[in-house]
Length: 172
Image 1 (cartoon, rainbow, N blue to C red):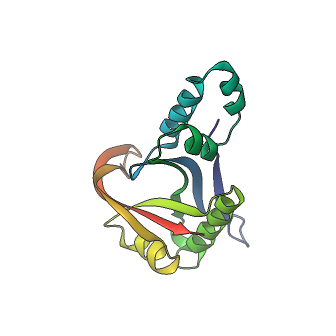
Image 2: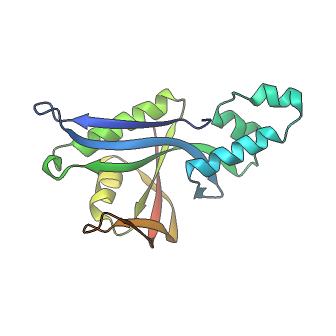
């Protein structure tokens, strides 16, 4: 894998049960569009593969930010994206979400990033309150009718839909 990815979890101190988690992934931001990390990786690998043999060897193990900065178009930027934040019902309103997000931000900084991005649906008031009011994320843009997933509680299946989505970012 070219793009870095990590999962951060929070355990209940008494029961040792997992009560919160989130993921951090490297990806690309192109003209305001946050790409799925798999697609970003294909773009980065393709750009390296298109080089001559000597340059290919030079960039073979290069990190995503260097490939984006040196080989991709000026409207392309390597970014870190916080995603899949989940907190168990019994642990909500106890600072677990904030703590997980702060660990994600520290990891992004360790990876050399000075900013973290995330996507949140416009209608998700609870998540927006955490990100915007408590953690200081700012709106970058709105993606109307962006692809979204729902879980059918009865079947456990994912349902593809669309929703207006905010791209938020925080300078670290």
